[in-house]
Image 1 (cartoon, chains in turn brown, yellow):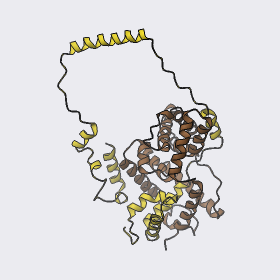
Image 2 (cartoon, rainbow over the protein chains, first blue to last red):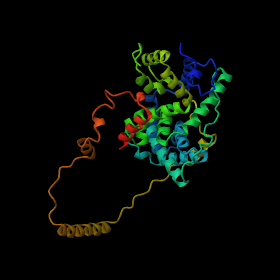
Image 3 (cartoon, one colour):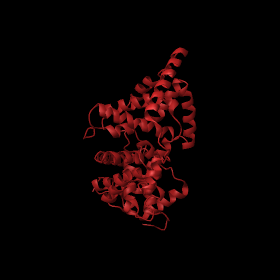
Image 4 (tube, helix red, strand yellow):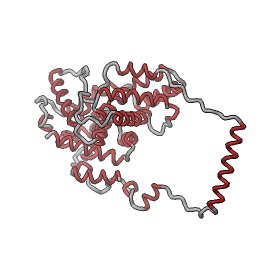
Length: 218
Length: 159
């Protein structure tokens, strides 16, 4: 029987009876609930929305913002570590993407293309406002959660936030690779396209980041 | 570690994010679960990936409305300026005249050199040998490398 999670991650104050299986099952249930359809469904929906948006359909443009705001904001927030700047960069990203939809060549998914634009927007905003802040501000907000065990969940969430703080201490490329992979679920191929690097570099940056995080938690 | 489940640590760690999001098919899912049941190292990483997955930055309330308001109407595309026939004829004459003069000054063009793409050139010089072979084939798994070794590998990949 695998040991409780708090023995695996002794640096965190996790509930005594929290197991990997329990933690995993809970997260999988929430992720499945949040997903609407397969990636093929998603691509087909995107294609239809993009075709309408290119023609100037306001509702289609709005739908694309709604579908991808979470991904775009999570990316700009992680690069900039500043809520206001991350919001500005997210807006710039959507403006740039939606006004240049006719240039989207479909050699990557729309999501990957959009995240590449979001990264550029974040770097650009970062340059305009001086270097990235060393100490990350509160970019993670509490969200309503439907998990059954509220007390244990509150503790776990608090510890998740600590892990998130440690993420801020990773070098930028590792932080971004870990964010895109573990928090946004991108494949190495998609990370490579978004970060404009090789798939090998994306994979190594991710593993290096996770390894460092584990060391920081000891 | 290569357990009875048939999956080794590297494979499991590579697909942990998909496992955490419940995106794996039944066989792969069962393989990862069987591996996590006996491998504490991968179990530790799995717990870390779950905790990370829970703290994705969430867009603040009001941001969606702000962006939707800004992008709902497309920015008009710039209309390309089309010059008159006379202007085009004058420009073409200018280009031909200047080009002729420059060619005369430069003399005969150099003999044609076979064009080799940058990638082909890099492979020829061994810079991208890792692309020709599977990354790290036969070598240690990524998770077995130390931080220093991973950093060295990364520098090689980025150089």
